[in-house]
Image 1 (cartoon, rainbow, N blue to C red):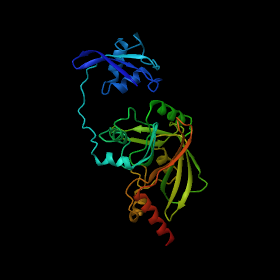
Image 2: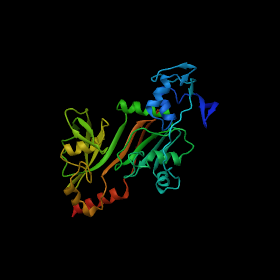
Image 3: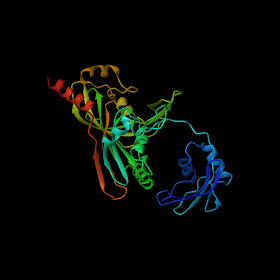
Image 4: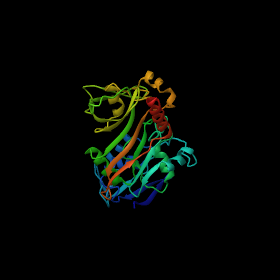
Length: 326
């Protein structure tokens, strides 16, 4: 456990001495302080480190110092204007519903079947996100962080780490491309069977509104997605998309680049195609993270978890099958 010993109090604030445990070890001291001193500007964090107000084992350190288990960190009282944010109520229907979305959970990880329309975290005008909701749902959890992300309108498997050491191990699997993620997407037209891999560099642009738009560009980052036809319909194809790299909006842009935009994609889609699906009841992006395969960071076991599609996606597929057979 982390041990806190308050030895001085100033204006309801205290100097803290924090002993780092094994789970907190390995991170830079500036990142540790940013996570611990919520709402404190980064510039202030660096200032108090530079001035020697933050000390480790009674000595001055630099922001890039990496903490070790047993280190004692002196954290000075920091006065900052707190933002008044409405708390995420445990009674919110969305929070309660998250409990029904849990696919797997143990002491190290939590795996969720994220609903479409729910952001993975709050921000950008959103007061509610999956991670905020889970922290309310699991108040006893000392640590809950996203191992990866899904777009707000994408549904499916989302992996959450319950220990910092677990998060580091999962990020290492992602970095080494040892984690396999499979998505199901409904795309326009007949996907060509020979098109099994799309390799196209992606460049991300952030507009003044804060909206992220991604395009294929020679100036972009190397990106690769593997595609496999799962089922064909009259004017659409259900494909499995497996991203090798993990760029923003990668599957959506690669599908568009291949000439087969995803149904009801409000940024990269085709409104004419969307209108052809009017009798299917679909009104959301048809992109679903259906399966995730990775090594459990604690047991070493290979886990492959699957997330069922929601009712709207299942009804859409059922209707397309019926129309195709008629």
